[in-house]
Length: 392
Ligand code: S3P
Image 1 (spheres, rainbow, N blue to C red):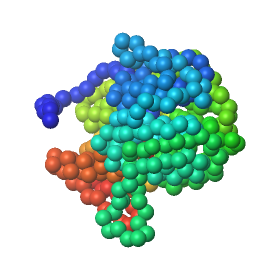
Image 2 (tube, rainbow, N blue to C red):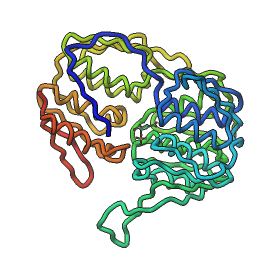
Image 3 (cartoon, rainbow, N blue to C red):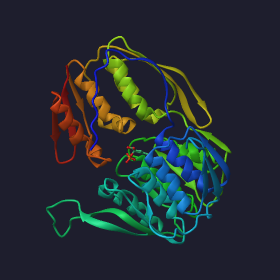
């Protein structure tokens, strides 16, 4: 374990430019790999998860080159059917996006591939993707482990990595996704590229639409109407040549809360991704009284982006409803910190998905914030879970 000593700052002032968004970065490698033509990806974040996606597709036979700083990546796409069988199992590390989205692509390949995962991803549920991909015709074999200790003959078994998948001729499906998840939606849409006919996915709540936007950029036949997405398969994707990845709003969220709760602060964050389904953090902080301004929200290419100015302010309590959770799923931990600094009682409803992320985010945040003196209660019912934070 490494130890860090942190001194309290009295204020923060300045301007930052963040690395590209992780979700968009993973998709840029996957979709470029199965398109026709060369794609240069700029402002790529050289983080372990994103480099894991690069490594995965190199193992599947795709030529990918990187600049010395690893922030510009060139992918030599081989078309929908240009992947090659890997020599052995592929390790995707702990990136859920890489694993679940790659399963979607592999569902369309007529050779078997085994994907293995790191320690934390190996504990995360995969039935949410294996069920629809099997319905489409993929053969999948995953590790089973009981979801619950109270086993009954009817207990459904969850599935975990390692996962071996062999795809081939896929059928289109109509699928109503039971949990709001952009990873599940994306896996089905990518598999839909290989199905004969139209695959229809219906989301319970809209989630980040990076896959839909990027597939459109690569000339896929995709249509979106409210919560329903329809994709027509067996049409080759065409590379746009170059992609610029705007800054990661999840990384920006830490600076938004920092600039808000520290007195005399002002932070300008440049070129941040402003995908409408990722804006929950900004909306909630504004509702709490934060002084956050979004400047020049414009769509250049395929994703909206703009600058954000944050100034110190006094926060008040808030209630976050279940339907808002997907738009701030990765920002809930830092919003819990904001709630600790707000006047009054904040309530975050319908948060159970946080239990199955890279860590159990409810447990890690509440345990550690409590150690620092926070007043946090978790209320769990059979169907749902909520967090109550008494601020101040
Ligand atoms: C992601 C979707 C979210 C998010 C994750 C990245 C994506 O997960 O928490 O960090 O890239 O699509 P779920 O789809 O499981 O909600």
